[in-house]
Amino acid sequence: MKPDSRPTSNATPSASGDLVRQRRWALVAAVVGAVALGAMLGHGIAQSLLRSWPAGWTAGLGAAIGGFVAALLVPLSGWAAIRLVQPTLSARTESATVTRLRPAVAPTPRVVPTAPYASTATAPSGSAPQANAQAPARDALTGAYTQQHFVAAADREWSRNRRHGEDAALLMVDVDHFKRLNDEFGTACGDAMLVEITRQASSTLRPYDLLARFGGGVLVVYLPHTDPLGALDVAERIRERVAGLRLAWEGKSVKATVSVGVSGVGLSHQALDGVIADAGNALREAKSAGRNCVRSAPIPPRHNDEPKARSAN
Image 1 (tube, one colour):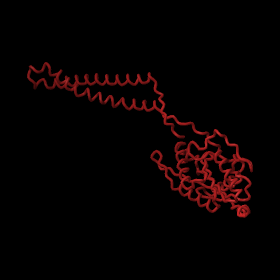
Image 2 (cartoon, rainbow, N blue to C red; image 1 turned 60 degrees about the vertical axis):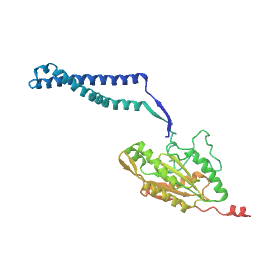
Image 3 (cartoon, rainbow, N blue to C red; image 1 turned 180 degrees about the vertical axis):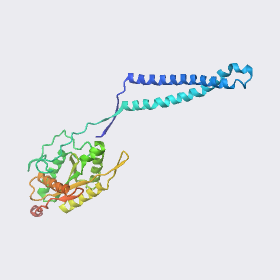
Image 4 (cartoon, one colour; image 1 turned 135 degrees about the vertical axis):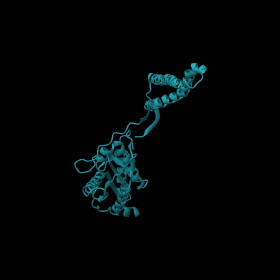
């Protein structure tokens, strides 16, 4: 969620008046208490000094000492009262001014239908997905593309790759034990960790690579012009960067790891959802292997060079 810069105040006039009255009463009570304390101390000191002072001075001795002590205690007690009341006033004032947050986009349910990590959100083979023009392109939390925007953009890349016989690959990245991290440190910590992981993954990619959040702790990356070996190299770099990440959270150092499934785009894939399903199956193998590792689907047959030969002629 991104904070809106427009602050809103929930304070009411009656609440402000109560705070002012509380401060006034605190100051009055402090002054009265200081004067009373000064009088008591002055009387006590005067009684102890009566024997040593001349007889003509004893009449005003108590009042003089009491006034002197009160003059010292009144400012001191007023300052103490303000220090005691001020934290309460500040806390109430801060709670009265809040930062409005833009409503978060409802997260897409985690993509786990009948086949492990297989997506049902892609369009049928040969047809472009019907994207909602009003749907946001970016995930509100991580800033990565949304699943809907990713599918539309990747489908266009898919068509171009098939037409020109170019290499491409897809990564599916899942945060290990993401639910346990949320349960142990809170969802706010889990969100902060996911934002950092997304940033680490994005820093390894090229400008034209596509990075999206598919919901929960799942990120998906589409890599144009990338063969399976190159995709494995990218996946391993992402895994290593996340493994070395340490998030400072409430005095603790929180760490996380990711598992990555890799799938190359080949002749056997008739649609993008087939590539996503293969990457999901590879991700499941990485989880079964102990997590914090990279696994790849079988390398598919490469696109033949027939379209290139025709274009050369």
